[in-house]
Image (cartoon, rainbow, N blue to C red):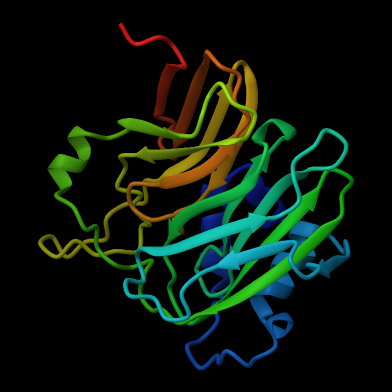
Length: 280
């Protein structure tokens, strides 16, 4: 297994390998540059997809929403949408989010199932330099489709944490989830998951000690509903401080939503909520 292929299993190992390689795109990139000419993308593509064909997404099938110029490079909003419904016969099994110019470019590998109901995932990321950002949808039959956006941002991975360090430690791993939609209906409902975690990249300098804050970030999230997996995320420090994800799942009326998150220090955080229960 190559270093980048191992990324799906070990973000920490991949971080060390990729930073050691030092192959980061420069800010001289322009929006008109060919996305396929990116040296880092060629390495990621070769190692992660191993020669598989990645087709341009058909019109109206896959969209990637991101600002052309980020207001805050450490909090860049990203939305990935697939218009086709999730059915047992044909569904998106994975979404890959890749940021070419980041020290560790594979920002997230998101797992989906027919129980997800709808493919609309939103999050916030760090962008370290002017970069092509890619969303790649993998279908259950192995087909791959890609779309790209060019984002102008700089310094997101080395930006210091925005919150108070002691307060961040006190709330470490606290999670909350908000549900939008009818749990007794037939349409997929939206969940918004927030995890309190500093998600230190290891590249930011503490302004008081003048030392780099050690890397410490959420690396794996698994969400199930009614005992069935509906969403998972294998992520890296490219995800912003206090990771936030919006995703969908099919309602079942009264059922248990379970979230399990693990970080790079093997700390485990769990949230269990009974949804649809009658209010006393």
